[in-house]
Length: 160
Image 1: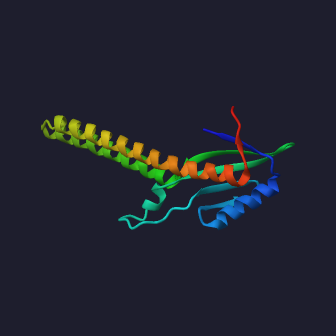
Image 2 (image 1 turned 90 degrees about the vertical axis):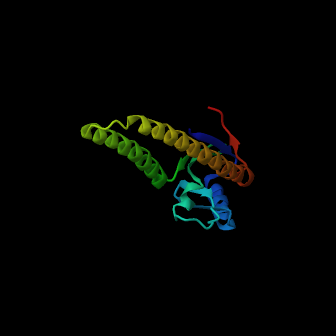
Image 3 (image 1 turned 60 degrees about the horizontal axis):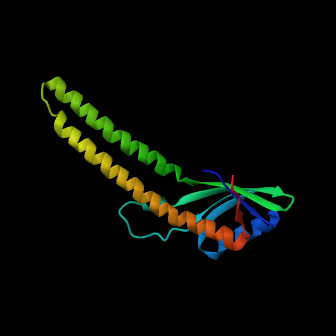
């Protein structure tokens, strides 16, 4: 979903304010021309996998557009691309494993499809719960970025 904001500040002023926000320590990201990426800085906690730091945020991809009354900021929140790949790999990998096991059991003449069906349903419930939890964690990070834009750039959301 694309978000649109308007501010009375000029594009150069917006870039300076975003740079100041990135230096303040609460946000991380980069600015390239009229485009920018920002996200809440993750406080890296001890974890088993280094991937944990990617699970905790969404990245705001924004663009500054000149307007006669200031600047329009158009942007979207996106998840880190590595996480999207891992979601798909894990989800489809488990499904492929269960289907392959069922085929192998049918070839051998065994009937184990009932136990695999229960496992498949449990897996899908757990996977759906994990997605729900990650989306709620994203909401906090999205609110943090939007509050930054409201506070420092004095933006107002434009309704489509």
